[in-house]
Length: 437
Image 1 (cartoon, rainbow, N blue to C red):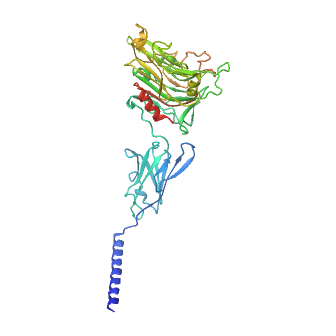
Image 2: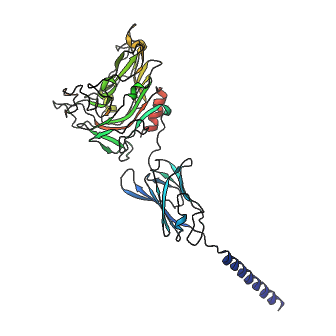
Image 3: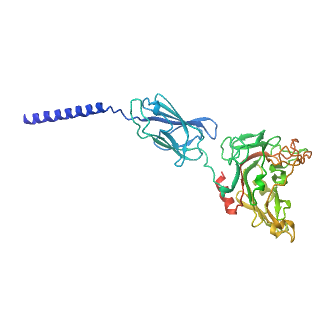
């Protein structure tokens, strides 16, 4: 009997204790925790162009989230819409917070970034505890991590000296903001060397051209100079007035009065033609000529050519015909040396110091633009040797823009950079490794 009485006592005490705690909860009015039931990101797949939805609420961090994604957070019950604000929901890469627009409807909160996320970057979406349920419940575990699809943007060597950068990701804008958007004629944006859609400019070999106005500063505001770009020709059906394969002017700023790059019709070589200025202010031009079987000053080449990689015609074609390759031309005003690189490797170089004694080119101080209207206009032309406004070569079958069989560029152009600085061989290799597929 005594044991039974003790049991009744403890059972009663426990029941009383439960009643006391229940009464305290009711008095405090605490609501259950608010939890995330689903978190998704919906946007455009970079390789297919189709809409995809990625689950961010899984046990592991999500990847390949489209940079243009819109985020939808579904809670276990209705949220207080007044607390669903950009100050309570954030998306951050750890250093920078992405501006967002937030809206709520019932238990669903939609988060729309005001700008595209950066490709190849890790982010965290965080819901602060100040976002509450309609019944006052507070969020717990409101943080999810994810990575965006695509490539992390490349930081080029001498980034501080990069004056212009055309990514050609759907438009002809200079990412640096130093030059006006290019005027486009018959340009398509297609899949790039990584398989990403709308990420490279395609030129049709007939009418396609992009013209950037007031571009003389690319050549006049510096002595040291580097140009870097990725290019792939499309040789099929690209012929001259006789039906024979013809060369291509990939780009030009007033042709040789500034800078031009030309691929030979047999794809056995190419050249840059570049304008320079000298100590007494005289302007001149010099070609960085690189054919197959190239020679230097030790085996029959010009005395100023201090290096030339000798490639067979087939080896040259394997590089520059219908394949993506990285081209860099760099001029170092201090050493008076110009260097050409393909795919991170030195192909040819010259040294103005090695020109004949007394030759004016021994006094070259740097690059320049020396074009004058109406012959040429200071517009950078992608897809041709000069802009349509210039009159030079208008009637030449190979140089007139309005002649369909002229040397228009047919192919793809991407990641075009101008750096007001000279690149070393190591810096060229670094950029190539960072941008290569």
